[in-house]
Each structure stands twice: as structure tokens, then as C-alpha cells.
Length: 255
Ligand SMILES: C[S@@+](CC[C@H](N)C(=O)[O-])C[C@H]1O[C@@H](n2cnc3c(N)ncnc32)[C@H](O)[C@@H]1O
Image (cartoon, rainbow, N blue to C red; front, side):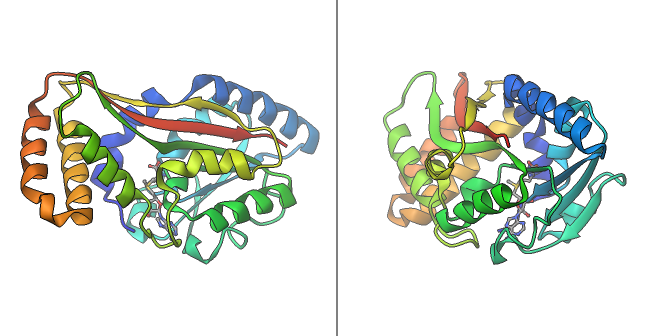
């Protein structure tokens, strides 16, 4: 599945505002202890890294020497990553094992695990455990799209969007909104977690327009016979003078 650089740039400030600071502090404390123990820079793998937004946000908050490798199947996005990181073109659908070598301290992924299947996520947990790496998975969509005042068609749109989210994104049937629940259920270790919801205000016109169009088109793919109603919903949604909350979750598993 491909994602445009423009879309990743558009969502960046909303991601940054949504990400949970408490979990980042837990991770930074763990990273300080890990690097004190190893005497080496923290070795970090970023799965589905795109243009490097997870690196840009997280690296300055970890407070230790780090070495990052960014993995993605999109060469064009990886080219936009900062020079100081390593990049690796790779199709993660082949499984997470080969992507995570021995000696990795931290595996992270931003806005990725809702695209993967349950067996893939189980393999990720197993591989992180096998190499002794912490896992920090952020901004997983959790199925909530909540407007301040509910309109008649909102629930139907969310239902269709969430069905679309479960479709195959290259990894088998996607976990979509159930990704966070699945990670918690599949992990043998305690999962620290917090909500990281996007808050899209009525003035955030570009982000709102992109989201509404994305939701309309996803819903229409699932229910083409409802296209006219969905078009009418989208036209009205773009003009709604209210905040919409898009639910996400951040999760951290320490070793
Ligand atoms: C929603 S974007 C998130 C990008 C980045 N983590 C961020 O937060 O800005 C999902 C990323 O997963 C990558 N991706 C999707 N399928 C992939 C696959 N099979 N192998 C490697 N990367 C993949 C996409 O190219 C894209 O960069």
C-alpha cells in the first residue's frame, strides 16, 4: 500500500500533538539504562518509516546516543529521510524477522500495525522478544471517529471505514482498528499504553478535507451503492464547524 509524502507531511503536526509524552519518558528512562549497560549507542529499527517522521519526533526525546535504521518499501519516501540515519528498502510483508537483526535495542513503528495481519504482529512480538528489543508502536488507529455532534450518517460511515480498514494492505487481512487490542492480547509482557487521538479542529481545513475524502472513498469502496449518500455526507462534513476526534493508541513493551 502506498502513502504520499504530502499526506505524511500533512499528518505530522497532528501526530506530534497526539503522541503520549508519558510513554516517551518511560522509553527514555529505559534507553538510558540500556545504553549505560551496553556502552553502545541505542540501536533502533523503525518499521514502515516512510519519510522519517517517527525518527524526527522520537530521536530528540530519547536523550541517549542512537543509531537508527529506517525500513520501508517506498524508495521515494526513504529518500526524504534525514541523511544521518541509515535506510533500507525492504518489503516487510515477507515478515518482520529478517528486518530485525540481533543486537537491536528498540523496534519502533508509527502508524503501521493497523495495516498488518495478526500472524505478522505475533511474529513481530516474537522477534522483538528473541533479540531482547523493546517495542514502541505508536499512532495505531483504534476505530473511533467522533464528531462533537453526531449526524445521522456518521455511524454508518465509521462502520464502512472500519470494514475497509480490515482489508488486505499487503500483509494479509489487516488488523485495522483491532491492532492495539491484538498487540495487548498477543504480548507475554506487560503493555504500557495511552491514547494518542488526533484532534482536528474546524480550522484545520487541509487535514479535515484529506480525512473526509479518505473516509468517503474508503466507505464507497465497501458500499458502492451508497455513493450518493456518502458524497452528501462528505460535502456536509467538510463544512462542519466542530472538532473531530480520530482515535489512536500508543503502546510500549519494555525488556
Ligand atoms: C501510514 S505510513 C506511516 C509512515 C511513518 N511511519 C510515519 O509515521 O510518518 C505507513 C508506512 O508503511 C509503509 N509500508 C506499507 N506497506 C509496507 C511493506 N509491505 N513493507 C514496508 N513498508 C511498508 C508505507 O510505505 C508507509 O511509509
